[in-house]
Image: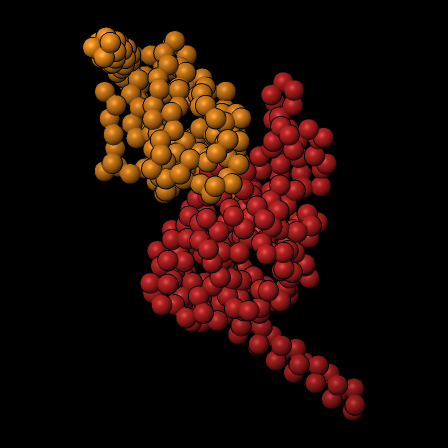
Length: 226
Length: 160
């Protein structure tokens, strides 16, 4: 008899869990269909790992820093002449649009470097602040950054040139040659911009190209339905 | 004395303008550069991008082999190529400009990379860029430093 009750309880529990799960899923599926330039990549089963970085004012930047409200997060590096300045310019335009729109609890822009070796907090403060003084640049340990890059589904690889001028691609774990800092290196990287919810979890991603006037529509939709 | 200086000065000016006119006329039939610009960057930016449209009005394909800019550690030809979602920065040996065609240097695509500036130019300043082509031509353009990501069609300048 007890066994029977137990079985029923388990079945009911599974049913409730399934209901809640599919319900949550269904909600975001409906939302996802309305989004024009972003994808819902929220996965409650895969929360962000614990991380600890350093912001441009040398303050700790960790999971809690992402729980103060909505965040637009992107990965950059300052030696980037093309893609990263474009992204930061787009974010500056978007920020102006959000201010003009009087969007409440507007997401804060956080730019995390792929390249802490060259991008110290001080460097980032001047660089990122040039695009918008409200932006936050974040540096820190390479291993901490790599962990975060991976959990966002982002990717980067460094490119150095050998003596014959041939490009050599180095993965995140590969060691940089001794002369790399002097000779310089570039970074191939993904260029999504992520919307992180106030629980500090990845919610949506915006692939390139980024059009601020479309992004703000998706952001408002997501914030209103979260 | 004053008269002499004035004469020399005038001769000098005449000489310069003659040179410039000659040079531009010589090249205008072949290669035309439209709207050269450098994207404004933070004062500590380690690298800048220069962009322009290069039109080739000749019957033969032309290659841009290199660019020279004073005050930078290195100047390289680059192309951003998206591959499986990864934006690849690919150094180029040259930039091809097809006969009776054009090549657009723009953000997210072909660009001239100015590496290691002695000082980052501010908005409104202009950067002198010498372009070296494979047909023996070289051309000097003055690229305006401005904000933005796209070409301003309305502000397009023709260098005749």
